[in-house]
Structure formats: structure tokens, C-alpha cells
Image 1 (cartoon, each protein chain N blue to C red):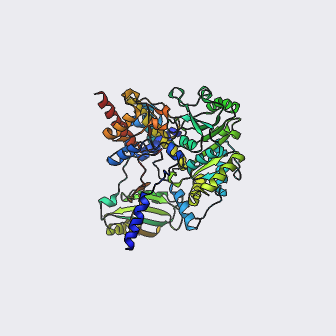
Image 2: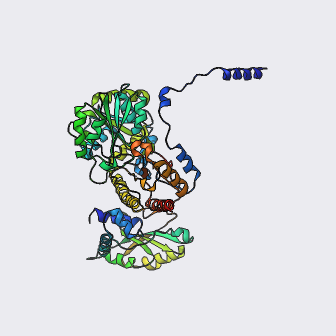
Image 3: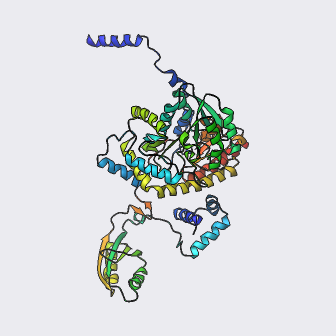
Length: 404
Length: 163
């Protein structure tokens, strides 16, 4: 008797009217553009994936060992909201020595859970509903959705192949309106590998200052700069106090899974971002912070070794692409090549889909990263040299089969 | 010795069968230059030889490896060099080092059996005039050799796509 009652109760519940619980904001952000590539890659064997946006290196062992030691010592509690004091101090030293940018570890830095979090809290700390955020295009996929979620309006600013994927003052000027508040930079750029040298940054600095903009500068690939040194946005004259520097340990130290990044900015902005961080994240993973401390203290040699290796792979891969007729500019940073597939007569989506099914090589269509990426595909060369050589061979065969 | 030489050395150390044109592209110089640099590094004795890293334990199941430590009385004018030079000539001596600590010379020796190692130590090494003491340690398992891991392990998998 009792069980019947229960069934009836359940039944009547399901018949009751249910609201649409999903928020308008969640509905408005687009789903991942390459879900079906995931599925295709999962179905096939022997696929070489150049679609991976992370190092192929495992985290250097001494860094892992530092985390294990931290756990053994019971360092498994929360840290202060803004992160371990020692880590912020080391980071402050690192940024000064390497990029000549000075941040006070006590008041101008937050250790975040990946750069993903730092960009989110930075955006939420500065964007009011209706504010326009100028975003270089193409760019890493998270920015526009985060801006939208904060009530802002993303405005793409093209960085074209003709300009070596730099942002130029003219292109920037064209998109500025009275509502423009923020400029999002990401150099070295994911997906193009383009970089902004000091002169390129100086060229846009006046526009930024004249229009009273704030720069959010995602420099997570800074250490992966191949010709010369990376120029930090905040190091350029007049830009320190209107720049939020976002970076992390994932790429340079091969620590993607540790989820550790940082935000550095003038105190006022840091304090606002810290309020958000303490309510949504409280603090970043403690053992990851101890690992990062080890990485930043003693990881530079290994990092340099990885960077040298990426540099050589880039030369090998870009040379291969150009040899088989996929025009590719020389990416000066990150670990992505961004060749044009226009010569094949296919769109970037068609190319990527056919390449994975017919040749077993996975790449990401450029359009995923904004309209500026159309006609290109992103190939991550953070794979072994053997795989790079083999993927070039397969792509060559595929392209030849198109012309046959 | 510049950065290109260093990079060339690490590329060759990792895989000395890499074709010249690949080396040239990676290093950003011509094939001729790679060849010239390689020859020079060979002539200077920086590159000693090109060989494969082989896990012999997998091939010769019965093979025995031993570390032999020696206390040696050094010779006037020669120190340890003369006796080390003599020991190094034995083809079953794979490594030979002068080191600090309890003993002076340390050898890595291979043999087909324990008996062969024992005979080598007792009949050829120990009787040498300046050898004061020997200590033989049999190797039970090799985990890493020349920077190459011998133990199978599953590497972490990456997602096929990520941004």
C-alpha cells in the first residue's frame, strides 16, 4: 500500500508544471564549437592529435615531488585568499627579473585557479553591463563568453595575417566607441602564435591612453617566445597602471592539470578582483601552490630546455607545412602554427573534418577562435617530432588526394 | 661552442639517426653547416660515438652486471691514471670512474654468469699490484640508463582537443 502511494506521488510530481530553469546568460553563450571533432577523434584509432592546447611534457619531477612532500607534511589546508606569501614573493621577483614589471606581492597579486579564473575575475571586477570590451580576433575561446556572462559586450578587433597577427593602432581605433572600456590582449597569441614586440605595444599605447582604456593582458605563453624576449604589456611606458597582467604556470612549466595562474594589477583592481576570488574560489589548490613555488624557484633550466625543443619543433613543422602547400606565417611564440587552408578550396571546418576522417590528423578549425580565424586551422606542435613528421606526411597525402 | 652546437648535440644525443635536412630545419641553418659542425664536434672528441641504448637485460636473461669498487694505492707521478688505464682495457668493463668516498675506482662490469664475474675479480683485478681492496655488488634491476627509463609506465593521457 505504501509503495503504491509513493509511486503515485512521484507520478503526480512529474506531471506538475516545471519552469525553464536555465538562465538567459547561460543560454546566450555558445556551446563548444568542436564537440563533433571530439567524437570523431574518439571513434578513430591511430589519430595524431595536433588539437591539444597543452604541453606534451609531463610536469618536471622535482615539481611533482614538492607537491607530494607538501601533502606528506599536511599542507592540505586553505592558504590565504591571495595565495601563499612565499609564492607571491617569488613570482614578484620572477616578473621583475624576466620582464621588468614590478608588482607588490602583498597588495598587487592574486594566485588563481588557472589563468581561466584570473581572466574571469578580472573581467567581472571591471565590466559593467553594456560596457564594450575590445578583444583581439582570433583569440582563445574563453574571453567572449566571460565578457558576455559579466554583462559586457565583446567587440572583436581583427589581427590579420597581413600584419603578422599584430594588433595595429589603426585597427584598434576603428572599433573604439564611447562605450569601449577594456582591451583584451593575448600575446603570444593562441591560436596564431603572433607576438607583440615593444614597438608594436608602444604603437597602441597612445590609443589606449587617449581613450582611457584598461588592458587585460593574457601572457600565459610569454616564456614561449622564440625570437628574442617577450615584452610584457605592463612594462611599456604609461601602461603599467592601466594593465592587468594575467598569466600562469601551465604552459611554461608544463603544469596544466595543476590549475594555477595569477593576476597582477594596480592595488585598486587587485582588491576588487580579490573580493570576487574569495567568494567564488576562496583560495587556489594548496599543493599546486607548493608545486608552483618549486617550479619558479628551481624550474628555469628545465623550462628553457622545453622552450628550445618547441622552437626546433616549430621550425620543423612550419617548414613542413609550407613545403606541402599550406601557407603558414612564422609564429614567433606559443606552440601553435596557424596555416591557411584556402589553397585546398575547403573551409576550415571542412578541412579539419576531412583531415581527421581521411588522414587521421586532428587540427582545430580557425573559426572556433573568432571570425578572423576563418580559412585557417590551428595545429599545436606540442607533440613529438616523430608525430610532427608523420602528420606532415599524412597531410601531404591528403592534400594530394584532393587535387587528384 | 655556441647555442646551435649545443642544440645539435642534444638532438643527436636523443636520436643520432635524424636526417641532416631535419636537423638543418630545426636549427635554422643549412645542411652543409650542420655537417660541418657535426664533423668538428667529432674531431674535437666531444661526440665520442653513435650508439643505441639497449636493454640487454631483456636480451640476455642470464647476463650479470656488477659494480666493483676498488681501493687503490696511487703511484708517484701517475696517481690513479696508469692502473685505471690498465683496467679500462678489459672489454667487459663498461664504465670506469675515479670517485670520492670509501673507494677510489668504480667499475661497471658485465658477465655471462656470476662465476665469470667472480673469476674476473679474483683472477684479474684483485691480484693487480696496487689494488688494496675490492667490493663487488651485483645489480638486481636497472630502472634508468643514460637518461632512458627502462620501467614501463603509463603516461598521463591528454584530451584529444583542448584550447
